[in-house]
Image 1: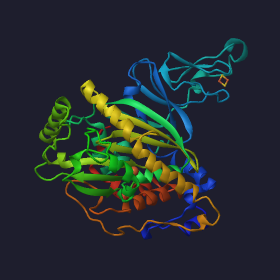
Image 2 (image 1 turned 60 degrees about the horizontal axis):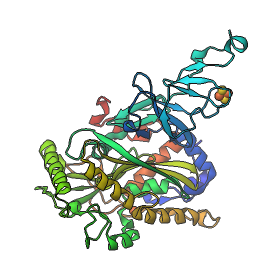
Image 3 (image 1 turned 45 degrees about the vertical axis):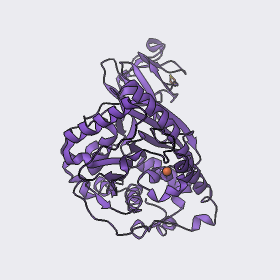
Image 4 (image 1 turned 45 degrees about the horizontal axis):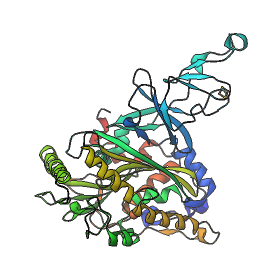
Length: 452
Ligand code: FES
Ligand SMILES: [Fe+2]
């Protein structure tokens, strides 16, 4: 069963027409939970949240609670947070350390590698009936630790994570690699969680590269909240993008990126003149990255969404955000802020303050965005409003390719990334095969066979 005919009739990503129903209809939402969130690779958390054996961090996949956990031997697992006896949550804390997850209801207990260990009155009530080995916590089908970020899927048939990511790997690397170009090495310095009354796709779509919405941030741009917080310096960010050429990149698997390519000389742009130590740190990172990556260092990440519900900022600010669905019109946002683990403390502190000024429920930029998403959701639930589709015709067919970045590239502001997102979304909702959901290009991408 695919989408209902009434929705199919007003859904045509190739022509830039998207049904409003998909943002408000409870039936579509239930189908998303069943067909999309049970198959796609989802971002669950970061290894720095569970550094020691026994550490756990309660997370979500779709609507469901999961436990991200490091077992006694140091292996990372992702379990459904639901007891095998009557389904009680076995972990009711946000995070912590334990040797056992003991269910509060009838006290079955599970080891940190998910095995059922303790069953009260086992000998009297269960001996000969209950085979403990058959009743472990339910574990995801596949899990990967990619440069510290943990991703998982419930689908045993899902392709490996790098195949799923395809050419978008280049952009995720910019979020997870060190500022000086070394691989990996990031840590989470804080997580903000909040609920917003909007459909999850509006948020995911915004980060695909909706640069057209810049007027929404006019007030923030006027006052200036950039990382260096220099008096009189207007804007949301510092100047590193000043001379760059912006690109918008779409991938057949539904990922979309707004990135930028620096000019050939890729010179460092001074931003922290008021603080010589921070200035020196960022200058050093810039030059080291250039030395390590050569011409590829010219690619400067910006925003992205990795299909379906993980978005990122790659530079300033820097982090990953999961848009967890609660209902058609409610989303729980989890924003994980990242820094280089070995950055000096004063740099981490400066970034932490900047991230809070910019993002999250109290962040000035994110408040602008959220206001748009929640009013757009609310104004689309009405009987009349639902009859009329949204327009996604911006820069239709205006794309090409680029030597630095794989994917469908546009050098002008475009809604192609959103059209690509909804093409992929449609493939899942129509129970498409994995090659239909990813697009053939992704399956042939050179990253496809790389080790995870
Ligand atoms: S529901 Fe967990 S022990 Fe009964
Ligand atoms: Fe925005």
